[in-house]
Image (cartoon, rainbow, N blue to C red; front, top):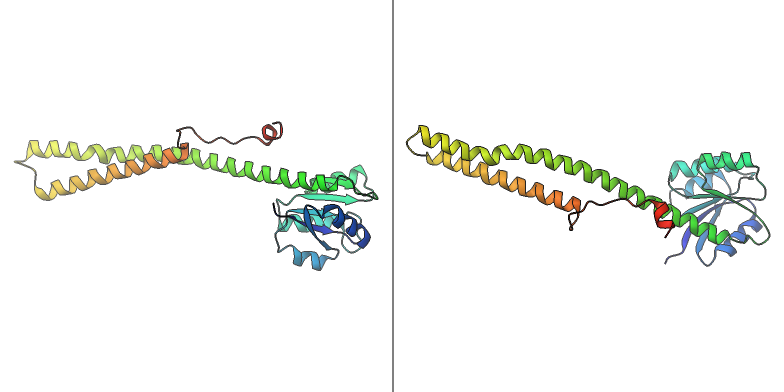
Amino acid sequence: MRPLKVLLVEDNPNDALLVVRKLRDIASVSRFDQRNSLGAALVEVWDVAIVDLKLPGINGKSAIAMIKEAHPELPIIIITGSVSPEEANAACELGAMTFFIKDAKLDGLDRVVKQAKELHDLRIQALRDNRLEIIGHMTTGLTHDLNQILQVFVSGPEILRRVINERMDGMPEEIARVLDVMESTAKRGAEMSRQIATFVRGSNGSAMKAVPIEFILGE
């Protein structure tokens, strides 16, 4: 498993060093403490962001807003020496996942970072599964309507053959070829529609289902 790539917004070098040491077994940490440098860093891809709310160089809330604008789904952890419930709630409303109080050892930070990444991955997978399920429902409806349309072209040539044979002395070759092409093309379209419906349902004929994150975590 590759090391996580952690974006750290922290002005205190000593505190940043503690974070780096605590996460050295699971992550590569890059520190930023100015608006310009943070903005340039946000063009890169990150796994987790850690933000100190008490920053002289850039306001912590502004940093969270910048990160969320560039990476809406990126998990953000607040890390600060002290935070009031109001400040924590405000930061979480901006998009932070949780907060972590600084201490001399930062015990548990590595666990919190790993959990943030795991929850993020589960959420993204759940969104993808839900999107696939929606596409499946749409495709099922589309193939049903398409089959209704194609049925006219599948059954129409046979009706036309019977009517023409009844009213004319034999079937003109040109008309016969046109009816054959219409019939074979309609059958090919119906088969393609059936294959699409089978693919959406899955090889065993059952529709794909999204699994709630709560169910996975409860195992």
